[in-house]
Every structure is written in structure tokens, then in C-alpha cells.
Image 1 (cartoon, one colour):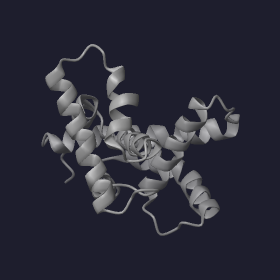
Image 2 (tube, rainbow, N blue to C red):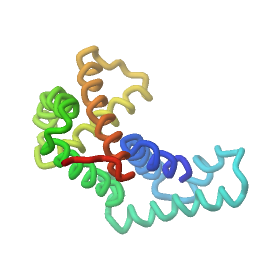
Image 3 (cartoon, rainbow, N blue to C red):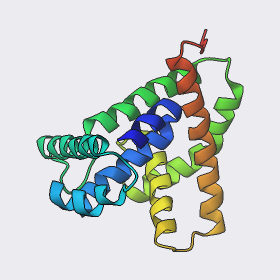
Length: 182
């Protein structure tokens, strides 16, 4: 919970990937708060009891939302989809503005990879940014499994990562009212 709050304030892209990981952790624990208490929350030995209760309540709220939104076995919570929607809106505004040539460049450098990934997945209806996040999330899972990622894939992921990093920085500036798109 506290990690999510910090990431949401600091880096929206890292926050979204973290929240996708939390969704998968909840699924891996069968949406069972007792398993989450024993397998996840128990690992936080340095936190106070009040923080432990807050963390369990946060997980329980997420479990309830996952059930209510029927994303028990796959998919993402609406709160996470809203992040993609907000980022997509900003992305479109940045592309429409002539003031951000470096952003345009980063996007067009990542675009062939995005198109290829969407083509391979057959899911051309999902937002481009979701495709980007899925690529980074998938790579993170492969690394956790200690699987090899090819040099070509690593280079493609670097382009996506650079693009999303720039977007996340602009998102932060926009949120603070420091981004002038006109």
C-alpha cells in the first residue's frame, strides 16, 4: 500500500507495473486474504501492527474490487485502466503539440515495436500504451524467472522504456501544472 502510494506520486509508469504485479500476487494467493496475510504481509516484519492492519485492509479492498469487476483470473482493475486512459490522453496531447520534438522522436522510435507486438498478440484494439506496459511487465516476469531475453528484445524494450519514462515525466509535470502544451 505504502509502496503504491509512493510510486503513484513519484512515477506513474512504475506505479502501474507495480499494481499489475499486485493483481497477480492476489491471484497467486487465490484472492484469499488469509493466504495474503500469511504469504505477503507476514514478510513485513519491520512494520507496526496498525500498518499491518492497513496493509491487510488495502489487499482486502483490492480483492473485493477484483471480484466486483470480474478480473479474478485475468485483466486489470478499473483503477489501473484509468491510469492507461489518463496517460493515453496526455500522450495524444503531447503528439498534437509541436513543442515536444523529443517526445515525438521517442514515440516514433518505439512505434515499430508497438506495431509488431500488437500484430503478434492479435490484440489491435487495446491502447498502444497498454501494449508497451505489457511488454515491460512481461520482460520483468521473464527476468524474475531468470529466463534469457534476446539482445534484439532488450533493445526494443529500451525504446519502449525510454518512451514511457518520458511520458511519465510529462505526466508528473502535467499533474503539477508545469506542462505547457500550447
